[in-house]
Length: 198
Ligand code: IMP
Image (cartoon, rainbow, N blue to C red; front, side, top):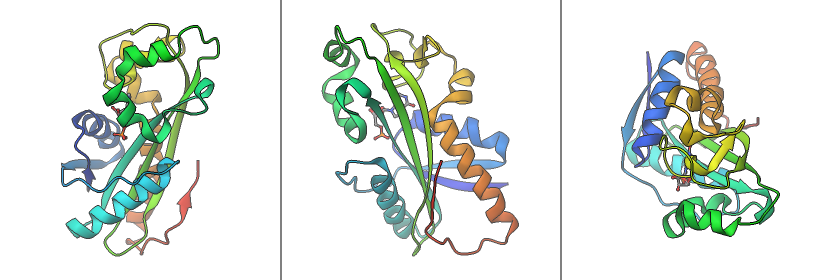
């Protein structure tokens, strides 16, 4: 079975990645070495830079995950600033920011960047459309899960299997696994640095 190093300090992301990738034939091992997080308007360059940095540091192939919540009524905020906003505002103040707002459409996005030492990263995108709930609902998942609803239920109200069948992370990791399968079969040629689009 192919094994991949997932560079992240977030144990929830690791748990989800393991559950999603194991049935797809990829074992996941966490590494907490960290990487510099660039300030960018999009997730892709943040994930790519992190993967390239970590692959060179660890001298092995790695994946990193950069995710964000993009709220339509707020012009895509907090987007790439989602971690900072979650740490400073949290879900209650996010809901207060959205108080009285009728347009609650939002998108959760994950970019998985894969890289080998000395090469350019490849990126795999996953996104799921949803709505910002009007109250905090559910105790499952992590981060914004209790305020992000898909099909009327927040991700926090879903069990792990339900979230992992439809989430932004699931969609990005499935694309990664499809690419990895072809990569293994073809004897691991060098990455071309292509961006793999959704
Ligand atoms: P990052 O990818 O760690 O930068 O995540 C940005 C922010 O979004 C952090 O506050 C995470 O907790 C949150 N986040 C990332 N993935 C998810 C998810 O699947 N559900 C809910 N919140 C998430």
